[in-house]
Length: 238
Image (cartoon, rainbow, N blue to C red; front, side, top):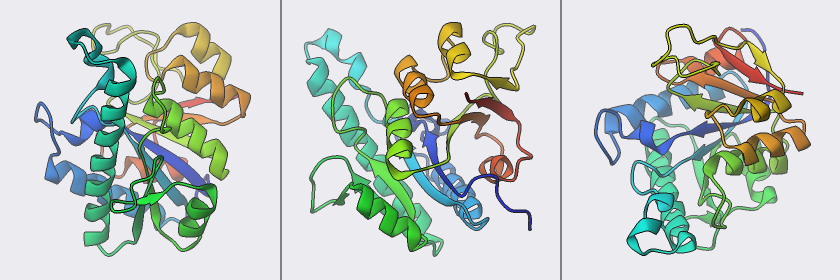
């Protein structure tokens, strides 16, 4: 078996993807398939951490127009990420793979508090680590969380799972002439204003020299393909 391209990564999943074809909520066949993909990637020898969004349950940024303050809305969104991580943890463990959810804020009856030490410990033990609760602070997206946590735990890359197979010059669903980039620098990604990740995440990745690989999660086995160096995507790196 080929050696994986990275020994430790953070996979960023959108909450919306976990809804499958439903308008909201968690689609069990989808989360089971994702769990299988993560386990297969772990079996390559790569240590896997996962940041999941909460948009399939709640989007804090959308409720500010309804009289809910942005900090309160963001906190509600962070709680949604905890729900997704617990669901994914259960799906992974049903298949016999150890997993551990770690929260950015204290909720001892639900899951353990995130610390770098705890993350290192569980990764070394072979667990897939699920990073819940965003950064624990409002105004930061789960994209930024993924880059922050990757820098904190010494991950070699962030694997940004999307519904398209990389970064394009324009929306490929609307523009048939859109060009897919094989590689971009962090600065080019920022200057281009590409919507696959927010600017804060790209800026932090540039500051920490952390590669981001943007790829499509729609194809089963795509996480493992990226780790083996045969997957289709865009590398954003200095």
